[in-house]
Length: 357
Image 1 (cartoon, rainbow, N blue to C red):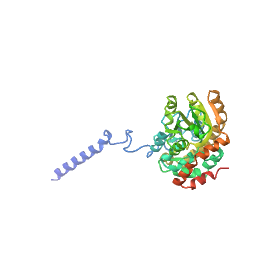
Image 2: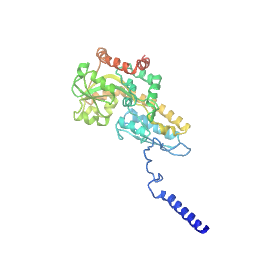
Image 3: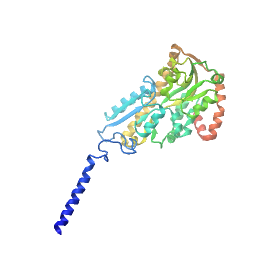
Image 4: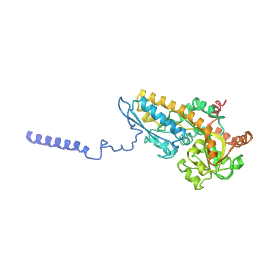
């Protein structure tokens, strides 16, 4: 009896060991490098921050390599890699190589990349009140906008951004947005009537050009040059530096300096990746991000002073709005303020305009 019982126990142990050993060659383990089901690098941050451990950081944006954003990012890469003693390994993807702004937001949220610099305009998909930054003629000049985004308004926007898989580490400046088209000069709102103007997928931008009488047409930035070239759209609006860097002067004749929006590019950062860093590395990334904001804004302002002349030199017809013409645009968009103050409340508008000198 005892001998038979011993044989049963031995057989049971043999079968148990065989079952445990099957994991090495089967499909159930992650050791072979397969992605966990339903997971992403948002849940499993790339790299680490233990001493000597490599930290991978991929950064993407839609702009050309000779624009202020890319120039400042190259300095950010150099600074962070040097400060970390080479532990941070940074790759930068310009020119919408990894998609347009909407796709980049999704990639950061999923953890496919760790950082991106999209326009704040596309973040209205996550909280519509961020659209206050798209309101036309909200700030009187760039410095007022800087003060607002570096102050209480920026804090509020960052709070609205958080909770979607990413956070913002600062607000580089995308420049004063101006209107171009291939049909006629724009001096008054009536000149926009009927023109097909490409806009970002922002309800406020769509509303702005619709209110001014244009045919507002949302389109990804990565498709814009072809859209202008093929006359799918007749015009667009962007900062002069981006217009020049993107070569839009090749397919657009008229540039109107209307400065209707002072646009910003949040340093959108995957939240799980950032939280996975040590406190020391988090502080180092924040310090370099703050320097990035300062450097980029300086470059952008300097470039804007000379770029309009270059656009004229390459064949664009440029007009600046007179004070009277400017006021016509301000008056024309007032119904938008009534509409959005009704939707979002007056407090956020009061906060933004409190920074106007």
